[in-house]
Image (cartoon, rainbow over all chains, first blue to last red; front, side, top):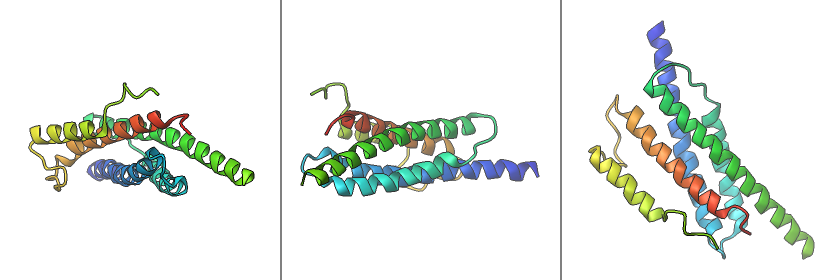
Amino acid sequence: ATADLGKDCEDNGERVRNHHKQAFEYISIALRIDEDDKGHKEQAVQWYKKGIAELEKGIALPITGEGEHYERAKRLQAKMTTNLIMAKDRLKLLEKLRTCSNVST
Amino acid sequence: STTTLTTPQNEVESLMHEMADEAGLDLNMELPQGQTGSVGTSVASAEQDELSQRLAKLRDQV
């Protein structure tokens, strides 16, 4: 039974990485649009949202256990949390800008 | 603007490939069982760091 439990946690580590991979792809696309002055911020907003959803899924997975393997997974989750907060902040700013520009037109 | 402190993306990418080369890995290759954990997570961490840098650069930028 203990071996099974260990395997479950290991699988979660892999799941975290898979969500990271998806989030990284989505947020990279968002950033590429967002970094371009002429980029369509509306599109960036959509990709940020997809990326944020993946980050949240990855962070929500429980990582229990001791050792290097778990520590790495937990560190990855910590970095994902940082980016979740930053991406949300960016999203908030972009949506505020959008609302403002809608009001002015 | 303050752009001097951030590492260009291509530099980050080439560094990641360098790391992978040293470990004898192809970044696009499926890793053998047992190695996926440590190396995969290291690459993932580096990728998250890259996102942090880019997001930080955009902060307060309209």
